[in-house]
Structure formats: structure tokens, C-alpha cells
Image (cartoon, rainbow, N blue to C red; front, side, top):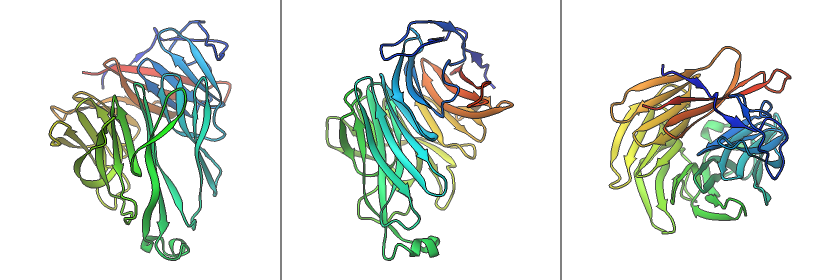
Length: 350
């Protein structure tokens, strides 16, 4: 396991958020005010969290931006660009209500809302969020039963679903303007001018497999990557795209595949730990979270190192993210209690 450091040089505001930001500094790896957060995101040297409020903090200056009310339920996924945050809120028990929010210092929008009904004539699904540099994106797809919707309750294994809607969208930081850039997708990643998505073709039967495509904006052409597969997560970095892929009829991914965008060729195919569902990529290094641990995979040698394992009394972990040649993640302890702590951790990449 690689050495992990508590960020004693981390500079964050210790008191008083405001829309104009605060320059009060605290030297600590604890993230003040984030002990009740249920979702986090990192982009460069800024971190965001969503709980009772949606907040962005600059790790270098300690300046904060409170973007207003956060989530009524757990924030399932969060993405960040500048001072704009995108997050999915989940509320309810047997009847689950999903709401996709976006907030910046100048605007706030509800981008989508749907309920999880077992026999709904049209059922939306979430394909994830991604934030990198000045880019923010999310993906959705909508299925409809072929025939009687009640058949999907009585015989769910024999239910045939067809993709009938959705899309892959860019969100403009600040204004929150939306732009549809690719078809419905079950996974999405952005980096620079590139958008990668595991897309479905509208009108086709949803078998769980999707085609990875990469679009370089502002161009319209798409580059198909590999064969259709059951893609769980995507990551982009420069001239490479990576995917966590599961075999058919599997509940989770079992392999990490990486392609070179210059020629579309597969450059690495490696087994991953059971339960790995979060992926970050930087050059020849990939970072995964799953199975109670965060691990680093060297794509040149295939060697995997455990960066961190779940600690005693740790209630949740968020990330990992890669920034500045390091892997970063957040550990949560006693969330929602007076003893609650949110700790930002970091370890060097090889």
C-alpha cells in the first residue's frame, strides 16, 4: 500500500460561507462544514460537496461559494466545473424520486425529474455525470416496454424494453445552458473538447450493451471505440479513453479496457477488483474504487497497488479523483452527528 498523507497543508475556510466567498484559513485535512454532505466532486484544485447546501471550495485560497440549498436526500452523483455544481438527488423509499440539479453563483436549474415506477409506460435511467476543466456533462436514457407494461412486473426477466429517448448533454458552467451532443447513454466522460459516451440507438432493444463513441467538439463526427459492451464507467484523458466493462448478465464490471484515440486500438485490458465502479484516468495511471478499497493501476505494466482501504468506523468514501499527480478521496465518519467528520485524503501516483 502506498503512503497516504493527511493534508496538513490543505487550506479551507473554517467559518462563514457567503456568495462572495470567505478568505478565512484553516490548516487541517478536515473539510469544515462538510460533515453532513452526501456527495462530493473534485476538479483541479477545487472541491464541491452537496448536503444541506451545495458548496464549492478552493483548496489553495480557502475561498468558498455557497450555491444555496442542496439535497433533500442522498446526492447520488456530483460533478464540478469552476463554481458550477451538477448533482443527482434521490428521495423516497419504495417510490423513489430522482431530481437532477445544477447550480452556479448566478443561476440554478432543475434539469430533470423522474420517478422509479415498476410499471411506468416510460422509465428514465441515469447515465452519470462528469466534470473536467471547463466541461460538465450528464447522460440519460429512457426505456419503454414492448407490449403491456404490466408484463415487466409479472415477468421481469422476460420483459423486453426499447430505448425511446434521452441524450448526452453538456451544461455550460455559469449560465447552465444545455446542449445535446450525443444520443442516450449509460455512461459519460469529458476532457477538454472531447466527450465520450456509451450510447444506445433510439428505437433499439435495450440489451444492456452500448457502443462507446468519442466526439471532439465543435466537430460533429463520432469515433466508435471497441465493440458494444456492458459499460459501467468511462474516463477520458488526452488521447486515451478507458472503460469499466462487465460481461453479459453480470452484476458488476470485471475488466478495465483502455483505447488509444489516435487509431482506436485497444492498448490495455486488465482484470479489476470485484465491485469496482468508479474510474479516473491520467496518462498511464488509472484509479479505481470498489470492494472497500481505492487502487491504482499502472496501464503499462498492469500492476495494481492498493492506495487505501476502508478504515474502522468509516461510513462512506467519495472519489477517487486525480489532480496534480496525486489521487484524492474523501472519507466520512459519523455523518450527520455532532461528531461528524469529512476528511480529504491524498496519496502520490507513481
